[in-house]
Image 1 (cartoon, helix red, strand yellow):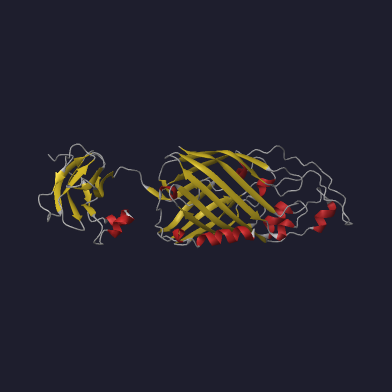
Image 2 (cartoon, each protein chain N blue to C red):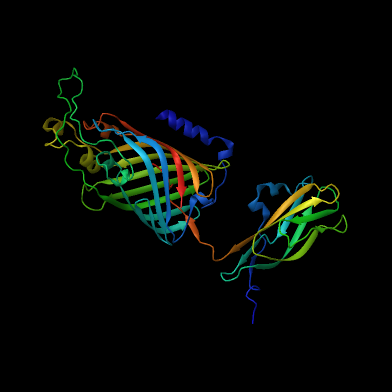
Length: 286
Length: 137
């Protein structure tokens, strides 16, 4: 994780990166108003699943659906309303959905067009350990329901990149939790390349962590007592590189790494404290 | 009755340096430059052709006879009459962008270029997109 951060920060020191950037300076950062922007990326990739005994998720398609009006916008499942739009600052009301549920369910919005070979628990018994604790073997997991989060997001545009600050809260009383995000993104345009570098810090409230990652009594009575959820920060880095072939076709390489918060990784439902995703393919914009 | 093609709107004074970083060197004495004024002609929503009078002004390290060529067949080669001449004006009526090239009359070497861009108010409006379309987040 820290190696990735060092690489990203070091890359910022390259002189060609430190150029000034106007708002909506390039076609790639702009979108045509009052017109649906549709695209699909086809290729191969994989998303690791930190849940114990859940398979990793193959990625074959990444859809892109967006519509921007004068104030309202829809962007890949997120609905928003722009309150303030300036050259160096934006403020939006916005909805979002948690990525956590995607680890549990095939048809979570985060997994649309992703396929996984199976998500049924194998009730796989892990190797004998020297610990006196019982193995983390669970009965069928109870439902982790879908919910939408609503809140506000602010973007600050600087010559050294864009900073996103967001705070959202469960709108449908599913877990009554909140999430926050601090995200820094730098877009680099060397020749026909468009490279997005991002560092992300996602905060999840205790309610969110408890709802998705606590063990419920019906799942395992022992572990439901042992694990106590707490709020925590996930840390992530993402690189999306596109090579522009034509007005419609791009070659696409995307890599993402998320270091899961210690408070979440401590859940016996998890056996990995990270999730990584990569995708290589071609993207078409209609 | 007004001719519908007459009411083209023109944007004046857009500096070439905003569009092309190479032109930032034009002020230096050893670099040739060609400046077009205006650089952009905005046509109304119902008009098709842009009708405008443009000025082509050039700077050279040493005064010499030059010619200006374009990629539009309606505008044949224009050449300066004296080495001291530094500008030419012409009336343009066009549906598409025109690329002008400054060449040495003696050597025919290309010295500089400039582009008249035609745009329409009926072109779609764009705005900032808040999310990377291919983000894995």
